[in-house]
Image (cartoon, rainbow, N blue to C red; front, side, top):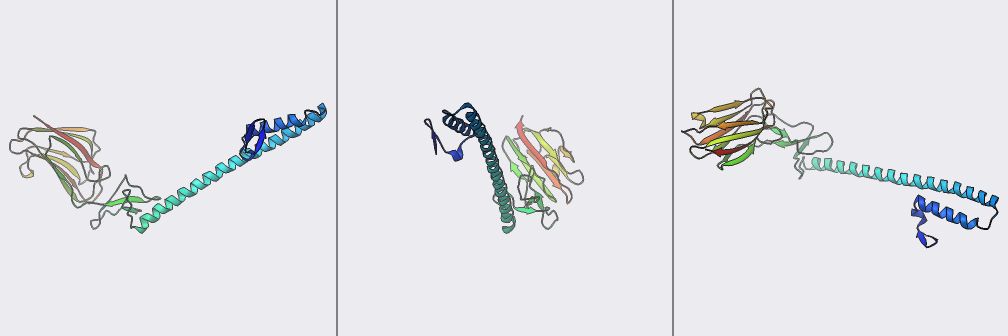
Length: 249
């Protein structure tokens, strides 16, 4: 510790300003009773010393910063390795949502998987999830929303998903598709106004992506059910759809 005129600081942690203050103050004390020429030599020596001290102080600070950056890079490398090992040891299972970290997802009939665009895997691996054997749903409320399986990731191959909306007699339904995109060859989205066997009105969409699309489905006197049918084949898939609906007279 250094004490100079009611000022105390640790010289090992002193700032450049504190070093300058210390050197100048010490110089004034030493030269207070010396001839002018001697004073000039002493002042010159002390300013050389202060320049060296400031440079050393700067270099030490830079070295500490570099050391900290290297330590952080090393910690990041360790974290990345631990994630990869965790994925490998548990056959890809991770609680953050990634089931299988692979070079490519399996899309054959025996073991269908889809690429989870929200999942995170180590390195260049892809986050894969198994496709569900079931899809679709039933809705009875005056309004609601639903999406294709795995949205916003791609839906799976070889599926027929039926979403049934049951309405009151005489009601119409407004479907608002904020996303609508299927593969062009083989896949399609079809809306039936009525039972499939007794279709009153049909809307059919292939390919895309379509701009936001509204569909006004009129009342079917012989049925109070609207069916949204997503079909996919064994080839390419797309994100599918996201839709909200509401009923009205």
